[in-house]
Amino acid sequence: MRAEAQQYIDRIDAALDLLRRFLDWDRALRRLDELNARVEDPTLWDDAKKAQEVMRERTRLDSAIGATRAIDSEKKDTAELIEMAEAEGDEDMIAEGTAALRALAERADEDKVKALLAGEADGNDTYLEIHAGAGGTESQDWAEMLQRMYQRWAERRGYKVELVDYHGGEQAGIKSATLLIKGENAYGYAKTESGVHRLVRISPYDSSARRHTSFSSVWVYPVIDDNIDIEINESDLKIDTYRASGAGGQHINTTDSAVRITHVPTGIIVACQNQRSQHKNKAEAMNMLKARMYEAELQKREAAASAEHSAKSDIGWGHQIRSYVLQPYQMVKDLRTGVVSSSPDDVLDGALDPYMAAALSQKVTGEKVDVEDVD
Image 1 (cartoon, rainbow, N blue to C red):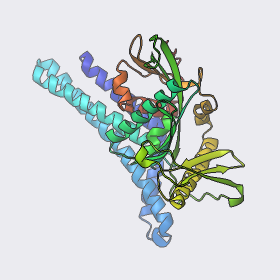
Image 2: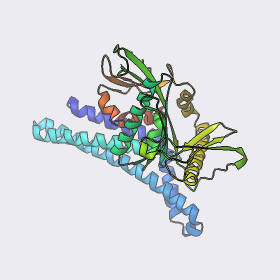
Image 3: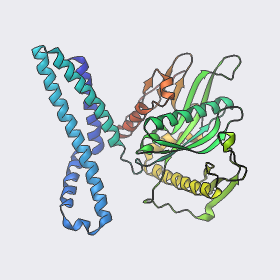
Image 4: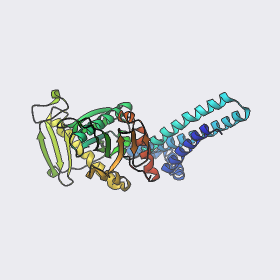
């Protein structure tokens, strides 16, 4: 087997191995047999809600197992075809088989990521908060660059983006912003971005053209649906209103319509100012608060993920999950997975899927990568 074709086979095998580990293959097969038997039971629909849960689980397992088997079968058939073509010296058939393996490897990677998005809230819409770290204008400008990056990423995936809360910087950039990203699996993908992001560049605000390092943090939490009940006592809330300070003059209200809610027992603070009505802003802020409290509960249940989010307490050196270097060389490096890009412009323009896929895979394998930060 030629090296290029073997590379694609190895990539497909790695994706299938991860899928089987994630599904707990033998257990998944037994569980699918159980679910198929339950579907044949006419009494299942006596409890419609329970029946729907069974059907959803069956559909998910059947789809994941079927996709895994289909890719494995196609890989074997294509590999045999290439071996026959090599024996006969048929270069056209070898090229055709290699192209088929490449397409199959891409499909395997896509199916792998979709299967990994099986968390309780992974399919939901998501809130994404960005906060500038210490450093004034430099960090505030970096925070605005991150805001644009995530908006572009969402647009690439066909998601809708709303600016829920915005606090502009004193000279440039933003102090903070909250985006509401709507689309299938928005939270599942974006949750891997929580943490501190570090930028190294020649500062456009430094007359001496010196290199500066800036930090901003990202915090991601899911929009919760009606099936999830979060109880909040009104007596635990501190509600403040203030005048909105939108991204442009035409957005700035002349009344105190913006709302900030503090959940006193947990210290969680949310704010909304994108609506002109104080009532609507309060309703959206309450949704955000419920989402934050639900996400906090998810983190308690997912002890492995909590380390990611501990970085929120300190937006600075030693806590970053990714470094973006624009000078004196070009590199974006993820410090959890080791994924590297030599094209920061593409990453800052929303090319984040490889980083998200690697982080999702790491959650399954539990494998830690020893990654050195970049200067």
